[in-house]
Amino acid sequence: MNPAIKNPLLFAVVFGLIILTGFVNSWNVALNILNMGLISAIMALGVNMQWGYAGLFNVGIMGFVALGGLGAVLVSMPPVGEAWAAGGARVLLALGIAVATIAGAVALWKKLKPGRLRGLVLAVFLMIGFFLFRWVFDPAVAAIEAVNPAGTGYLGGLGLPVLIGWPVGGLLAAGAAWIVGKTALGLRSDYLAIATLGIAEIIIAVLKNEDWLSRGVKNVVGIPRPWPVPYEIDLQNSAAFVARAQAWGMDPVTTSSLAVKLLYSVLFAIVLLLLIWLVQKALHSPWGRMMRAIRDNEVAAEAMGKDVTGRHLQVFILGSAVVGLAGAMMTTLDGQLTPGTYNPLRFTFLVWVMVIVGGSGNNWGSVLGGFLIWFLWVQVEPIGLWLMDLITSGMADDNALKAHLVKSAAHMRLLTMGVILLLVLRFSPRGLIPER
Image (tube, rainbow, N blue to C red):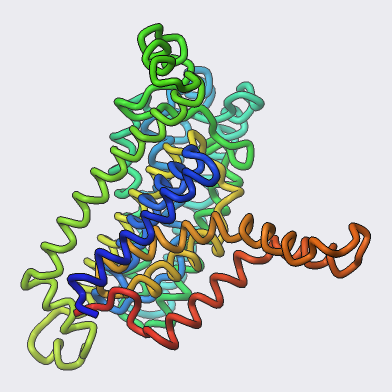
């Protein structure tokens, strides 16, 4: 089929399924799917920049998403004055000591000649720096976490608009990507996969355990909403809004929820369209052609004078920044940061399925994959339960086979993702919208 016809038709089918969900289930469910589909599409775009443009295998997407969520918290949440007074200055001093220790170790490594003396001096220097860091850091953290641990127990943020937190989340993810890239991008691709997986697990462990930073598993709740998204209760207390909803024959409570979700959809769609425009420009620029040349044949590109490792680092940072931006948007939509919910299945495997099914190397394919896979991830389980109930409708309620089949509906998500991935790889290995 002609791509000019097929591609819009695929998008029409996916959005038609979302609209059908609104009629069959509820418009609240449909808008939830739409909003998370927009965020998933942005995540898939970031991964597509790394894999589709440069062939970089990043299996630490979860960590960059979490860093994006942390950026939204650090920017938008109000500072906790008592916590800052109890140990905020000492934490900053300890972090400064840590940075100075690392910088000093790098300087010593460059200055001293190779040999045992260099190793001994570095070991002693790092050990002194570590103990000095812990001597300042541990009491400060204990003092901060003792300040109303049930409600706060952390330093809080800067109290700025949450929209500023979105690019800050991208910058945090980009910084982590720079550290990983400088370490592993000059090595084989499997080392990059190991490094990204490891850094992702380290990031999640830090967020779970460093209560002074992110409240750990107690979660940060009440993240402010971005302008111009209001709170439902404010809409319900507005006489003009209630009158308008009643004039349309709708319940004001339901209407307020739909209005908030629609405003989120507009904000997320603006970000997605802006990113699509930017990445499409980049893909068809000389830089994009160079990245694809490096992806297809690194040896030939390097022989032509291209800095392969430098360009890999560049695109790895850019893709991670986009993933971090999506993580900040998702945390804003949820209104809370929950480190315990970040897992590789949801935030790494599923995003990779979106990229592969949509079509790696094609930005529009990644967007399609984000919407389609998220829709299936949400809807397959209730559809599977309905199907099992239909199949077993003639069986007795105490039938063991019926009980087993009904319980199996909870596993329909994983089964469906595996089947879709196999079918796409078999019949359309380049994805639904392949790279041209």
